[in-house]
Amino acid sequence: MITVRSTRILLYVVLVLFVVAFVMPFWADITTSLKTNVDVITTVPVVPPLSPTLEPWAIAFKTMGQPLLNSLTFTIFATIFSCLIGSINGYALSKIRFRGSNMLFLFFSIGIFIPYQTVLIPLVLTMSRLGLFNTVWALILAHTVYGIPMCTLLFRNFYKDIPESLTMAAKTDGAGTLKIYQSILLPLSALPFVVSGVFQFTSIWNDYLFGLILAQGIGAQPASVALANLKGTTTASWNVLMAGAIWYALPLVIVYLVLGKYLMKGYMAGAVKG
Amino acid sequence: MLIKNLTKKYGEVQAVRNLNLDIGEKEFFILLGPSGCGKSTALLCIAGLLRPDSGEIWFDNKLVTNPQHGVYLPPQQREVAMVFQDYALYPHMTVFKNIAFPLEVRGVNPAKIPGMVKATADLLGISQLLNRKPKQLSGGQRQRVALGRAIVRQPKIFLMDEPLANLDAKLRVYMRVELKKLHQKLGTTTVYVTHDQVEAMSLGDRVAVLKDGILQQVAAPTELYDAPKNTFVAGFIGSPPMNMLNGKLVRKGGKLEIDLGVATFELPYWAQEKLKQMQTSEVVLGFRPEDIGVIGKYQENAIEAKVEMFESIGREIHSHLTAGDYPIVVVTTSAEDVKVGQSVWVVLNEEKIHVFDGKTGELLA
Image (cartoon, rainbow over all chains, first blue to last red):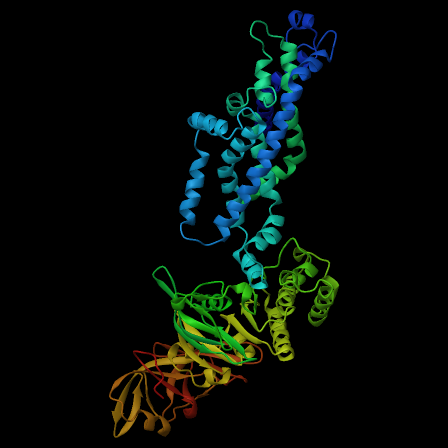
């Protein structure tokens, strides 16, 4: 009895230490973002501000407002496009029998492992020839294409678990290939759409490299790049930087708060079905 | 419907080999066999959901499948409706939507759909369930919805793939009767796949028995029971199955006998006539458990056996005996005056014995 309790206590002590270690940076981020320039110099980051102010938030938003809008635009569009295309691919690869479908699926899967760096030069050349360089469209296109393999994999594995009798029944009922997708599979795909949607949103939102290379002008600059630029070259206004980081993290936090419940469900569903 | 030389392979495995069937209009036709015998494969080929490797399928006078000539009518254009073992109801749709789906897809006038769905639901007694989702229904109710979805568009042919296999025993018997009634009411040609011989016997106008993709026998249920063409059919149809004893056909004093090792059995006159050309050879003597009498003392042409145990099913009693190494099951309606361990003599109903070839299993007499 005693040993059980003491190991319990030990466990909680360790866990609390972990929590402190993990929460500390966020805490310092928030406190610093609310400090005046003087407070930043005179106090340690984790200490609450002496005279709290929202001014750093306003300054950060002035430079990050447009980039945040850019990021939201291309992230949302690229997420939707890659999920939709991934879903259609997944349908074709799991429910339509054709020669070489397994080979094709293998090729798609390889796409997941291609590092961003290896495609930079062809990517820039392609975008400038298409006349999309320095536009949000370049980022939408690049991220959509880069997201297709992962989304295809996710949807294909999800559709694989939908009994074949369902699509067979739809066929004998008279539904064609597109109708089956639209009336049967698509309405059943809420879960994979949430999972791959969150996954895509996170990775596209967090991308820095494509943003840096493909969109240098302010009209297309992503928030990740703008945040890095906030640092300045000679001085660092930590309070503004921290406020910028919070602005930058906000959309992701909202996405997780809204969809987190479904996300867990999705992961669980995958885990149980193996 | 006509099926000619249908063959379907999965890699090296031949699921269906040279299947020939002629299914009449309004017939309730059963494909029966153990799992893996190719019955479901054959059904999927008829539905157009699988492309066979060779052979032809005709609906009325229309060729719908012939791989050699590139003829393949997709399932959407065949006038067939299918009921699946797992019901395959669309989980996100209500019962109403499920039944209406084939009508909507086929472009039926939307104003007419609710009436047709209602009529079908009334026929199956599921009108009160129309607004529910499949997961809110019991197994039997789902089964009815699946039937409704098949019936509603009045197809030429129903295809059913073990539709009762997922129901519990009591409900299965009930739905079996319902299916039979439904068929009598609608008169639609039905091809029904099952591994359950009781289902096959009670539902089918005719039953085709398959084994390893090869057709064994096509016949009406009673004929299948009384005159099985080979040992496989004889053993598969009937519960408990037919007793089968290996023996040697020998000629003794101008008469044919089967030497069973533990006893010799003199064949009745009609069997003598049929087998008189035969040479000495391995044969199998078959007789149904209900075509036997058990007596307490020796009688001519009776087989001696020992009583092992009794099973009382309620309506009937199954007595398990052994004659040498062979188990013999006897079905009687009243308890015999014998005890476990006692020696008895088994008298066969000579009109109802079967003699099969010991090597090929084919019926000889």
